[in-house]
Amino acid sequence: MLTLHGTGIGGGVVVGRAVVLETRLIDVPRYRVEFAQRAGEAARLARAVTTVRAELEALGTHLPADAPVEAQALLQVHAMILDDPSLAPQATVAIESHGQNAEWAFASQAEHLAAQFEQFDDPYLRERGRDVTQVADRVLRVLSGSGRALRARALPGDVPLIFVAHDISPADMLQLKHAGGFAIDLGGTASHTAILARSMNVPAVVGLDRASQMVRDDDWLVIDGDTGVLVVAPDPAVLDEYRHRMVLGLLERKQLERLVHVPSATLDGEPIELLANIELPAEAAQARDAGASGVGLFRTEFLFMNRRELPGEDEQYEAYREAVLGMAGGPVTIRTIDIGADKALDGDDDVHEPAASPNPALGQRAIRYSLAEPDVFLEQLRAILRAAEHGPVRLLIPMIAHGHEVDQTLRLIAQARTQLADRLRRQMPPVPVGGMIEVPAAALTSPFFARRLDFLSIGTNDLVQYTLAIDRADHAVSSLYDPFHPAVLQLVAQTIRAGERAGKPVSVCGEMAGDLDATRLLIGMGLRAFSMHPASLLRIKREILRCDAGRLRTRVARLLAADDPMRVQSGLERLREA
Image (cartoon, rainbow, N blue to C red; front, side, top):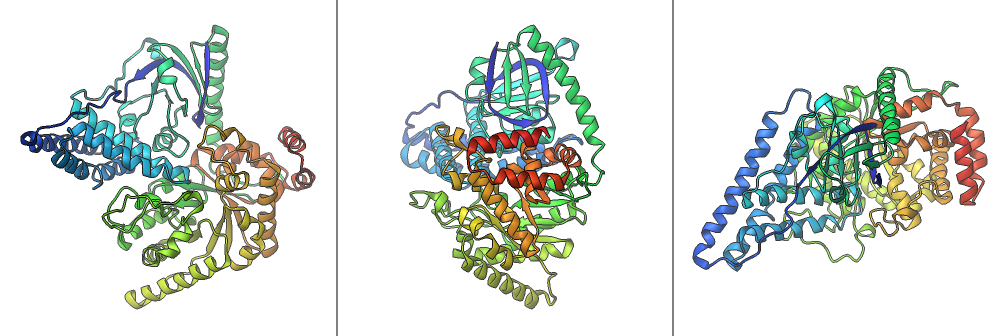
């Protein structure tokens, strides 16, 4: 028996047989092509790209009615990557000018583009590099003539199939119908593979490192998608235990479904707003069906990635409008683009060349980038203001740290309003403007931002990283990433208090909001709005229904008075047991 640990994506527990997928090329052939043969080699690459494009289109056309709402959008993202000018066109130049063979040229361009995403601090943007690699893998397989090494087979007694792979793209996942679970070497919670796995509502674990090398076809496996555990060849006693947990998990899921329409409030009557984090417009309707009262964080970066030309105002407006309509009257909080100068977006020929920044995480990113590119920012602001005509919209500024950033942003919003009024001959509806508290400086001066803005949203992922100087994507130090460190808790509590005193709503939209271990703590701090992935909503709601906010406030106040991490940890354990 072997136990491997990764990052759980949810979905509960499954016991089944392993199907190991070979989803990558081990070696890319590299050789020189004679000058007379280069045109034919370029044509071979063009045919491979056309074949992959047709595969993606066919998958989208034949999606079943019960396919996850994200499926079509994720296929479109891969199609956009395939058409990125820095891939096939640049590979063609390498073939024609330098005599590289098609596989060598295309793989080199894909590696170069994927490396650009590694510079991002935001885990969602960083994961887009894997999308590039997955698209390149499809093209390379067509070039090699190997096709896709994906298969599904029937086992007697309806034994679930657990697919194990080094990596797997959303397009490939959609071909694996009736999958019982996924165990993937690569990836994190922000990868499109993880997003689709959540939507498929199957147990999945990513970031397992070498599971695909350690597991053999037909091995019995156990996946616990909640704890991130993969058990290979479990002992009979362990197998029986997890089968029992699997049955209990199915019963729990049915019980949780009954809570969808139950009001979210504590035992002593404190209403708690449950909101959803979404990546794509189509996810808004799914979030509403899962019980979300609104969208607490709509990331807009997907519109700007993997393309040469920036999205126009109308394209952005249509995406934001779709999300607003999908929420059917619930508020939609749209975060302005959180991207950095480590990947330019100006449409120049060197659009994919990274800036020479020694540390992009501390460079010109998020609101700093937007203010440095006012024309780009104004276009997005106009699109957001127009979308507010279709339902309640809130505008969220990422990574604020200075008062002048708020001043400049408010002036540009006013300018965008004036531009729309002059062009459309009507006034846009009011849109509350809030700020993301993601750096210690913003948390320490949160009373100022609470006075100046309409609401605050705490991005705990970045707040933890910046407070503890930890990059959780760096395995050498990721164990030090601790959202319950006393310093982090003080900053979160201080921000919530600042909102209370100013009469402004505060939400948490980082992973901490969907962490059951943090629910009682955050309610005791005074938090009344949680925003998380839709898959976590009902479990958090159940915990909220069991809480007494008044009693928790007293207990949490005592816990926050401690500065010893061990005492804080003990206090958290007692809080969870209460």
